[in-house]
Image (cartoon, rainbow, N blue to C red):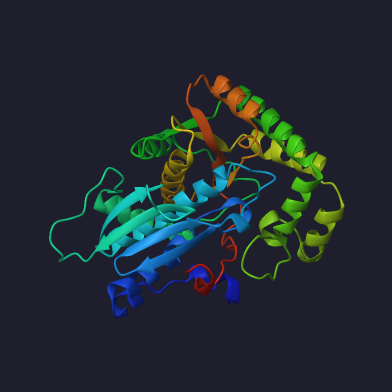
Length: 355
């Protein structure tokens, strides 16, 4: 039986038609939005619903200010939540229009989505609309509760080239490049950068304490990364919030993350964009979530290798390694998980994410 904090992953889609108003239907769709990934499962978002509009706000209090002072990863997470919202809206035949980092919006508002019922006349259109082939959208929608972060070894099973090319095409449709890193020599260089990023970030006491503040025991309050998601046993998970606060695990993390990156069966990839701004980071999040959902529909899961991203020098070196002029926004590893029935990470109740 799912714990209270993981019940968010069990959504009865039939409840949608029982909602009494458009605003209530939009609130129902937020259940899908919050299943998006975010840095250390911090869920740095809140949603404000008014009639036929939803405003998405980043929440500075839930950010990792020492590790990611620009808020890059928070914006990517918010973009992923917006992607889920758009996919769910299209599944339920709502017409949508999206504005990213809208002019004149309230502080910390990173996106606005307007909705119309399917019988409301002409569709709303804008440059930021997220329109997909109906069959593809349905595939992505069904994958929303199937996508999870998997931070352990993958099966000895390669990802087929045709599937990889689907990821490339899907990301490109949102103006973001999905750059596969499959050559073992390049992965070894990437692993060195990941390890270097771990050590750079871990050298700062405040950053280590920030990490520790998001590690949870297995039974937790609805956010953060529980011990089971880190591959810890019951007792290690119970002690993790304390041990990670008072002991320095930087070298251990660097070795572990390097090994995961070097894994022969992991397909590593960088999401890269031309626009290094909040709008560009949001676009990256939209592309990222679409790719993660398509991967989940194939039984493929991912985890993040973002130790490089907060450090400008490492971002630049990664661009050079890949022979690119655009900017790395997110780095992931993908593969077939070595265990079935991955336990989901918790989510905050809707009452805590709705304004």
